[in-house]
Image (tube, rainbow, N blue to C red):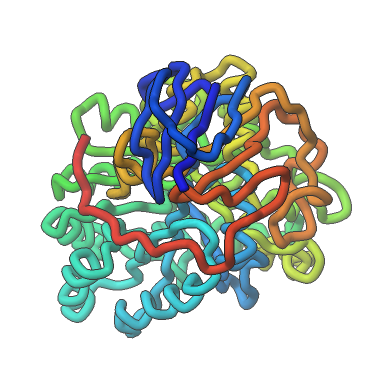
Length: 461
Ligand SMILES: [Zn+2]
């Protein structure tokens, strides 16, 4: 049966207008003020915004890290995402040296198959470049539809690649139409500073941040941009945390390079002082890159506003405080890195961004949904409300007020880094491919309903 979303204000990356949205099956088939919706089921959106579903380009679900595994898997993580207004995620498929890419991708499919509640795609981590990997990559792009490749410039002796590997990947990616993503921090410098801190018995969570200074991120961001320029390949810098790195991307774009950047809600709202919370609570705020000094926040908002950063990912990577974050009680290097944000990314960005006047509604939609869909080969199926697009839609009440908390969130983790924070605005009804999956604070979709997304190759825009 058809559905019609009535009486709301449709907001896309370019428009804001009153209209009804008619959905048949999985797609939007008509948009307008006076459309003939026949006996379609009416979904009331009076007083609400009608946004495209969020596209989260950066999640780690069911991911092993430092001898433990993230608290959220593809079921709990994607359910929480849906409650928060996100209807598509792109998760990072890890690889290991010597393991065929195909087998790593199979492992990731097994994690998501039959579990995911919203649609999902994969980025592929590159841990080495050799003839086998180069040979497999064209299949990965063409057959698996995995069109983005992630490399780590940090985590020495674990994930970190050398510059040669990065440069060869950029060259190959250009040939295949894939987008290279980098975690840009100088892992060698961080390794040295970390060992020095531990030798001086500086083991508290704050030293996680102090041993990963902004200069290490700025340098690696600049180095990656230089290599991408040399390879004439597009580059996407994940989780930009500070003004210095954001400026590198802006300079590159001003110079005509194909560089894009993502930031995350934690860098827009939280700062380095959180790591100093007593009773080891600072461990809840251990991300890499780390939280920065507060003045960086307005610079990052400005970068989103002026388009020099284009996306906001959650970097969802949840570990319980009890038993997981606690692994690092006596040694900050053993604190699993990351936090739970898949659910609150959308609302934090609306409340701190739109409601507080830092970004406009169109920019909000762009950075929470549209730009990621474009960069990662999902547009216009995802990332907009248009005739022919998937009916992935969030009906959002901009007047609702609520408090973020681990007691009410849907993520499978025992704390919320934004505990007690008041936000304005709430996703009240969420549709994924035409199906109402969240309504009246209930999840209505079936486990495993999410579909794997084969993504298109990179299209420069
Ligand atoms: Zn990440």
